[in-house]
Length: 184
Image (cartoon, rainbow, N blue to C red; front, side, top):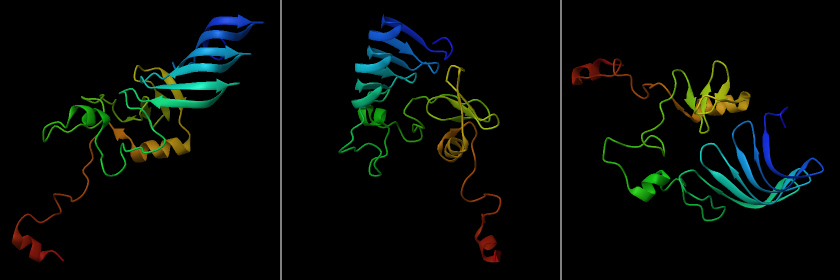
């Protein structure tokens, strides 16, 4: 495991993970639960660095049945999911605690939101630097290199460190009625 950057603490049999244990990945994701023949097997929980978790029944390293809970306590439901469905766009914390006053809207479910380093994006599990194509954890630890698909998704959808003017350019729009009639 020292070759992969992972650590394991727990029961072993024939030098393999067997019984109850804790396996920590290099990304700081932690599995706590039952093992068999070196694999997740039985009841176990994956704890992610952002505070979310996946509780499951595992068979030979494959999750067979499980449930995902976000860091804020929202539990994912495969059926009848009504969170962010187009009709109600509030964050889960806003659903639980109410909306903030006008002009003080939440940008993320975390309030106040994380400060994003210059020229970077907040991609949900860390910060993404598009010049190096590296995602680092919020504490600065390397997580991964982004492939083309992830790069395009982050640049298109994630919150960035800078503001951009969108819509009408105030310098090009008419400010007085007489200017509007002269524009063609």
